[in-house]
Amino acid sequence: MVRILRLTLATMVGLALAQIYNWPVAFLTPVIVTALLEIPLPAMSLREFGKTVLFSGAMLVGGLLLVLLVQPFPVAFILAYPLAIFLLAYNLHRGAPFVPIIMGVVALTIFPMVGLVHDGLTTLVAVSVIFSILLGLLIIEVAFGLLPDPEGAEKVEMPAFQPGYHAHGARAALVTTVVFSPLVIVFHFLNLPGLVLVLVYAAVIAL
Image 1 (cartoon, rainbow, N blue to C red):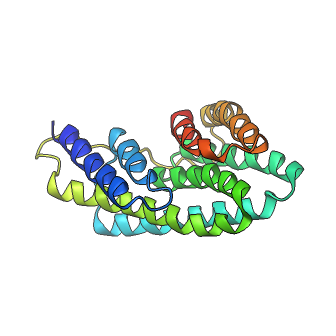
Image 2: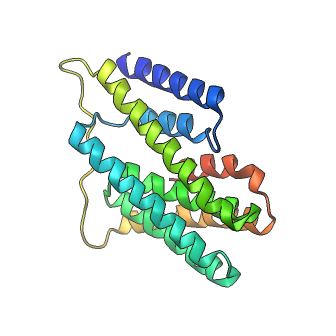
Image 3: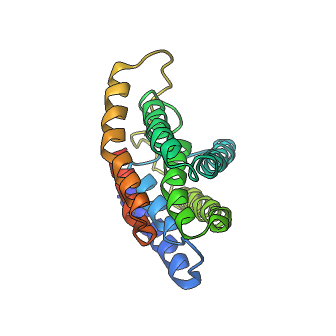
């Protein structure tokens, strides 16, 4: 019941802020809040929250730089994009930190579509994307503070990272890549930036 209330409250706050202020890509805040609390995401200490924010920001910046580098070259984009999605999904299945991986996928989903409108908009929207995601993480942290899990409740544990080759992770990552990458590439070359929200949901579901 506490988890349901936490999900409801945090999503309501995220959606209200996005509707009231409506900054660019504001829809990302309630999407991130809902997706992470529905898993459910385990409670984070302040130290863990700081590390998550730092690593998530690094993934977003890395995704932006990759898109800026390969998007002007169609062949390079077609080759590099599926590889990047595969590596992110593979490391997720090996137990890499969940939130930064999701942020990397979101970056690789949104930035190519924004770049179709105008090259300069990619960097401009990147700031809004980072703000939207960090706001979502902050809402989740506050929600855990207001509605912590009760004593004796089952603890949510994220899997530990597994070094070396992971056969199941490779197969699962290949499925994710085969399903999702062609969708982004088709949307990209058909010039459909207005459907970016469809791709965001598809990315989260594919993972």
